[in-house]
Image (cartoon, rainbow, N blue to C red; front, side, top):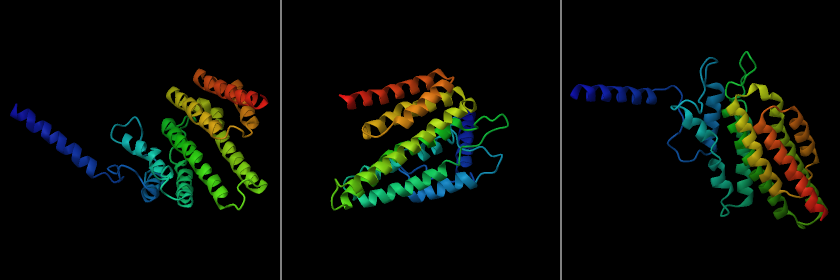
Length: 252
């Protein structure tokens, strides 16, 4: 029994030592990552790994927490949802997170020799981070426009907001473009791709129910004809029906 305990202790010691001597360092003990953390982490993930070195993944128990921390939307929600803070400050923070997210998109976009994504689930988690962030970012920007305007109901203000919402919708359409790469995803990746449509697109439409979604519906129709995954097709079908239901309500 004593020998077994000694062996177990030795194994635990080796494991702990290997964790603390890795050449890549991440602030995994912090509850939330701030913008300074993202500056360092995104830089490390983009440029600190060798070409043949495996990046942190959901499937690796040792590095899973890094991906979870990186894509945890609470990192920006903790600031952007704090109504005690000013709109201008929150909007500035949102803009900086948006800039970080654009750099995050380069981390997990690699393809193998068979044109398969090496990190499809991780790439989509980064995408979902961005979809959720943009809902907050664009709303804060629109709220700030109204707050700074002499007349919040003026046509100029309405046009600026309309332009911003149109840009947001176009950004969301880029996510649907990934369906063109359906064969590059694993089955888990396809399910996660569909999950993003199910969660974030209804949230967008709920936030801006009177926006013009004709381009989104047209895109969804085209992707529905092209998609092979039942989960993706189901998600697109629900999206199309949701957009149609909003049109019917407008007519009433």
